[in-house]
Length: 152
Image 1 (cartoon, rainbow, N blue to C red):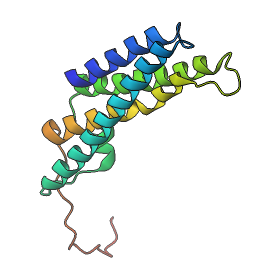
Image 2: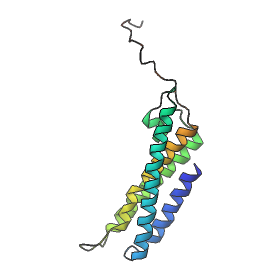
Image 3: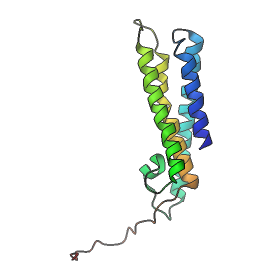
Image 4: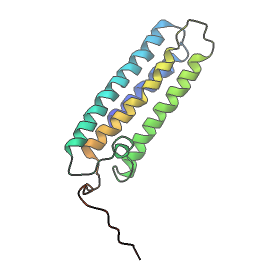
């Protein structure tokens, strides 16, 4: 959870630096580098979370449970913090990309648009947390046959 909050903070700081200096190359490099690094971490943690969840094959693990912490996967305070971090990443990325487009001339780079990659970091962090600490329901018996018996 701390990693998700730290990564979100780093992204917000990079964006806060890059927005007023969006036409300057150093600011563009900072926001692009931070965005790509967080995206790469998000991809790696998503894959790790998925393979780790597969190892927990005695339990039913859903993709929404794993990456969006739905159901009883996480306690309310953890779920709130993780999903707020993801929401902040999405919102900041959209604001940054929108601000970056304003005043662009033909052929200029909107480096702030690279921020739209960052929410993958939040998804990966959610998955990593859920794979390690999450609770999932019991596995559904795949050999059980549905009953034709009417209820009531």
